[in-house]
Length: 443
Ligand code: UGA
Image 1 (cartoon, rainbow, N blue to C red):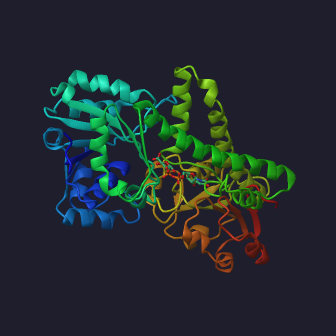
Image 2: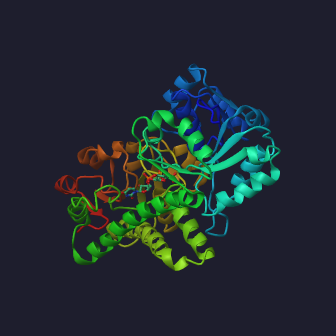
Image 3: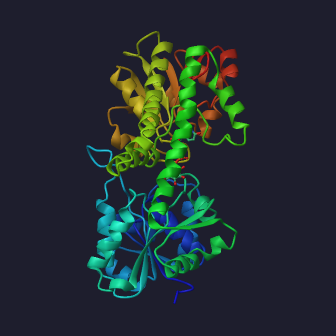
């Protein structure tokens, strides 16, 4: 028998877990969020989201006010209470290797399963190497007092930072990786409000469900690196990658989304996911099938170096001793996440090349200061560009898109700008006396 209105726990209240817990409560389920980090739990329980995500703070307040959401650090309470457990802990890149670090996943599954004495469904949502769910199934059976009453399923998550609430409540599709009809039905009950909206559902085996996630992120990364590879060709030929991307994107088979050229991808997902996938494929003996992902990665890294080169070219060959304003730190706008952020990588390289780099970002300042104490930080866009020899736009926040070339010109020492994200109107800047360079576009 399935539980029609299951009590849910969400283990791991980072980016993915906190969003999932809040959204499930908003959909009408009783939800318990669990994490080993008591400061995170205290923040969430008091209505504070410990990271920046548009709309999530209001959603948390609403969910807490409904009485359907609470938080705890107690795995035993979660084990006793939940019908469906969503496991949302992180799988960072291992130190010194491309492999995913599964320490937290293994720990979360065993900590929980060893305390469960009733029928329940364990649902993994973390991004994992193919074969992890099968291995966890044995691990869970070995440690669980409930034995066969406990079943494991996989439900990959595709939300984007910056759109987390919308992507969770209205996903493009749901994927259930299951081992029985019972698990499929129990998951369908847990996602009923979303399925009732007509959201496409793919029911699959565990391995396929795991693969969907890494294959999707690899495809997205490949699409970005494809257009950035074309940008390199453009640079060698005087062609314009922006016009190229527009023209390619009009072909509906190609599509314009994720075809935006520039400084390339970063963040806590795409870079580490393609590396972990390539690594896992090697282990499985099919490394050749995804060998191109290493090329995707190196195209992406080269864009960062090329951006540094553009700044140097504008500065007359070297940035040593010159002031560079670095606009942006987050890996993309509407986020304070600086994991593998292209913007900070470029700022770091400019600093290492001898520039005096001043960073400004609307949301990611605290995170950036903690990880890159060697850089200078400004409190505003105006302060960052003051007396700058070169300005580099590295994350396309709306505030930077809206910046007026005349206003900026008043502040800088030299009107030189590199647009690393194709966010500015080149003609407008040039008309107002700026030397303007952008990746993949003619000088
Ligand atoms: C990505 C995927 O888009 C989500 O579907 C997935 O769920 C998530 O990873 C994850 O695995 O958790 P996210 O990392 O939030 O989401 O960010 P994206 O919007 O995918 O952007 C990634 C990077 O690509 C950013 O640095 C962005 O600036 C860059 N990008 C994106 C481009 O350079 N060009 C584009 O056309 C699009």
